[in-house]
Image (cartoon, rainbow, N blue to C red; front, side):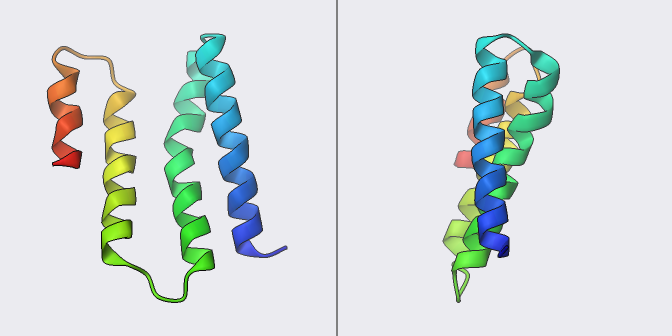
Length: 86
């Protein structure tokens, strides 16, 4: 099985598990699955492209950092969430 198929399977699995865990309020599974969605998408992108675009890579890294910050519950969280996307 090629790396892009494995990465796509992981992306779909982690996305479904994050959605289900959010709906059923399983915070432990959400903390495990949500940070792995963007890296799985990154591996899928890297497996399907010949030339890696810097803008797409920067966008995926920013999304990963934003998701990691969103997992923490602290005061004025929105200000820290805006930083990776500016």
